[in-house]
Length: 274
Image 1 (cartoon, one colour):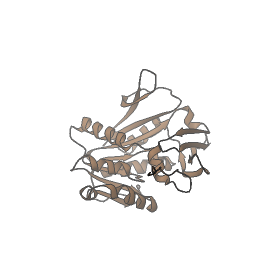
Image 2 (cartoon, one colour):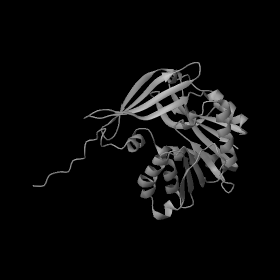
Image 3 (cartoon, helix red, strand yellow):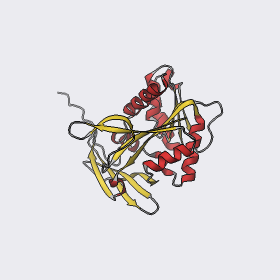
């Protein structure tokens, strides 16, 4: 009699931290759904040229090029090993034709993009731009994004807030694959706004993968981000707030709002129109 093949048990020694991150944190399908549908409603035409800043594993860029034969995506990141991982594990899974429509570049997002580049949309997700800790530097980044956009381009970013964002705490969540995602808000300084967070991964067997990802951020608030985007030259800045279902839980539907809710913790999108 044959024996059934069992999936290998994940451990800190055998697991791939980038794949764990994609499973636990990212949902590129939902991000691209939001960005493409919102761009179409704002501009009356399909989004065809996308740049993913701080692209990391480039999951969003890869998802975008899969959506339509005319879609082109570019990903920018400074970390060469992660870009290499993205090419080996995500870009390689695209068809040859799709691979011709995606380009991953090791580049500082503060630097001017090529003069021949003009994007319908630029995205910066997972609060990646929080690495910029001064108003001057963040405004410079927003200005670089604006310069890279087409005349009717839109910059989409997400942000996180609520009073629990300033709390030093750990949260645990069981994920598909049998591992546990641990979000560790290790240190927050209310004077500077400096925020240090870690992602750990815990497994049924063996030790924890400690500090798989480390974040040294400034906790930016929505009023600050709206002001800086306006100062950088964007003519209209819109906050897209998540709705609720009948139980009061988030329903993953984000709509334009001028007033929010004092939730303990929230994630919302921002759209900045050139």
